[in-house]
Every structure is written in structure tokens, then in C-alpha cells.
Length: 489
Image (cartoon, rainbow, N blue to C red; front, side, top):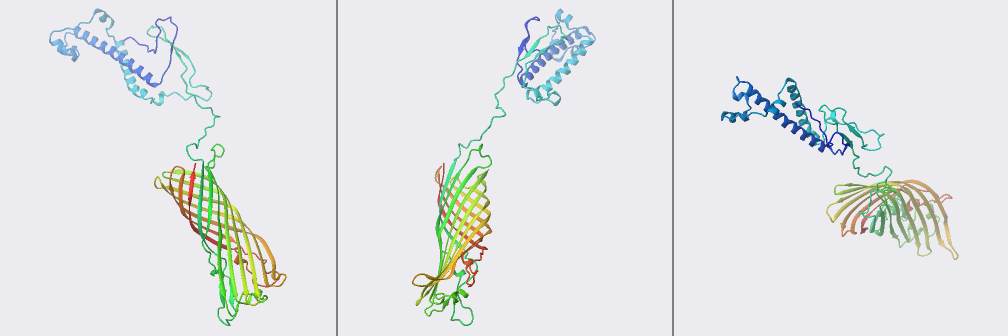
């Protein structure tokens, strides 16, 4: 059997110039291999048919059915006889060497047919895969010329040349890829109205007694009898999403302020017979704090908050989780005034003022659940540790003279520091109106400890150091509702 050489593109004559061939993907190679195997199979089939015809003609002892293939048996029964041309007889008389080569060709063809589907799917066996190019190569494919060094059939060697493949452009390693936030709002704001209550008035200290009681409890007023009224305030928040290339660690920054003004707790006790007094030696040394007709206690407080937070967002299915970390400043300003009025002599005052300035860091989280296209539920929790810079002043005056009131205690002030802690929880229901505006309604609760409250600074003793001590172990709990609007653009 004649050997065959496979070529992608062959020159018209042996002396022609080498042809250029562009090697395509593995599909082209597999199709070429399948076409070649088909041609080999057809030629081998023709050879085997002619060989069996010659064997049938020369072997007189064999039956016709044995000398010819089944496809020709019916024709032989009818008297037909196939005789190949003389040229074919001389060319295709099989020998032992030809039989060996024929068997070898059939084996090669079978292996090629088995590997053709794998090549067509680009699933090369491990032993057929080429090693990956090393880092020293500057291009994926380098043009090269390949020449056949052996030509067993005597056909002129065909020369193939690899053309450089078309490479798609790719980004240089130094090029920066930036994720744009153009599709999402870059700025958002919130404005809420607050109505909050306050619980916590310091230690349960006696404020007024009844001097006519000779035995048994004589207390008529304590700090626990002071109850703050609910009061209003407001809260503003502005947030913006920075460019990820400039600030990759934060998804957004938020600056917020809220304040509660006008908390007031007031209690008054009266006696027509004038038997009221404040406890301790300070009342004994005064005119209008001992055996007086009216004792009035007025407690005022206001709370201010400023915070700057870095937000890191994590999106979930139908929800979003935001991690908060930032700086927070809180100011609690309080004033407590005790006024004693004697119908015959006049009025005396005892004033205490405290100022708490808290500086610290806080951590928190915010979970927003998108219930429907219009409704969302948002829960926020925060906690922080603060340094409390405390300052308190107090003074007491008695029956005024014609020129100035008599001073029971000169103005005394003291300053110190303490450690404070905060915990906050917000629950807000959001109703989206359009792509920009949404309504907000919710509830907030804040607990704050490590404070110097005004009632805790009261000192009813009468010494040179009275009123100079600082007590910063108080706490307050603030809670109430909110309602407002938010916008994003």
C-alpha cells in the first residue's frame, strides 16, 4: 500500500516556493484528520475488494460465496463475473509486506478516529498537551518555518510557515480598573423630627424635709420624684459615597447631628405654716432654706450629639448590611436650682450646673431589609467608649440685702475626667415614594453611663470644701419616636 503525506496546503510543483499556512484552532486540525482517515479507509476498502476478487478467480477449490464478499454473492449467482482491469491486477497484487502495512494502516486509522472527537472538542489527552510557554517568551506565538525532512513516498517536501495569530488587545498591568458608582446615588440626606423622653435623675437624694415631724420619716421631696417631660428635637444626616479609587476601604461617609432641647423636671412643695427646710447644715445656716413656706426644685437638661462614621456595605439578597466605625462627640448640659421662699423674709437660691463632654470612638452595624418594592425595615445598633471631660459649678445665696444677696456659698467649680459608655438602638420603617424621596418613621433608644448629673453634685454640708467634690457615676436612658424624610441623588 502506498504511503501518504498529509499537508495543509501543498505547492503545485516540487520546486515551488513554500506555502504559508495559518494554523487555526483545534477544530480545523480534527476536521483535517477526519477527512484524511476517510480517504485512507476508502482506498483500503477498494484494495481489499480487489484482492478478494483475485483470490476468488485463482482459487478453484473454494466456493463462490467464500471467494467473494457478501455484497457480490447475489451477482455471482446470476452469472455475473467481476474482473478487474489489468492495470489494477499489476498494481494491487497483495504481498506479505503489503498485508503488514495494510494492518498497520488500519490500526493507525482506528486510533485517529478515536482521538478525532476529543480533538474536535479541544479536550486533548494529557500526553498530547504541549507544555505552557515559559515567562521568557514575549509573545504567545512566534512565526516559524517547518520543513519536511523525510519523504518516504518520493513526493517533493512541502514547506509550511506559521503566520502570527491575531491577538486581541489586553490591558497593560499598570492600567487601573475603577468600579464606577455612576448608577447608584452618590449623595443622600435624612431629616427627622424627634420626640424623646428621658429617665434618670441621679442618686435618690433628699431635697426637702418637714421640720414639724418629731419622729418617723420627715422627707417630703427626693430626686426620684423629678420626672422629665417629653420634649422635641431634630436630627440631620448627610452621606456621600466616595470614589473607590480614592477611598477603597469605605463605601460611604456619614456626618450627622441631633439635639434634644428643653427637658424639664419641676416639683414644688408648700407649707402655710412655714415648716419646710433643706437637709444638712446648709439649711441651718440660712434664712429662707429653713422654716420656709415654699421649696421649688427645677431641673433642666439638654443633649447634643455629633458623629462622623465610615460605612462599609455588604449586599445580600433583598437586604444590605452596613458596618459602621467612626468618631462621636456628645454634650450633656444640666442645671438644677432649688429655690426657698419665705413669705416674711424673701427668697434664696442654690444653683448647680454640670457640663459633660464625651469624646470617643464607636462601632456599629445597620441591617436594611427590603420587604417589598416600596417598604423597607432598617435596624441600627451602635456602642462606644468615651472619655468624659466633666466640669461643674455651684453657688448658694440667702436673703438679699439692699445692695446684694448674702452668699451662703461662694461660687465653687471643679473639673475632672471619667470613662463613659454608650449603647444605641434604632428601628426605622421606610416607605419609598419615588427614586429620590422616602418617608421614615421609627423608634430610638439610647443608654449613657459615666455622667456627672447635676443632682449628684448637691452638697448640703457647710464647710470650706463643701461643693468642690465631683461625682461622675450617673446614667440616663433616652427613648422616643422619630419621623422624617430621606432623599438620595
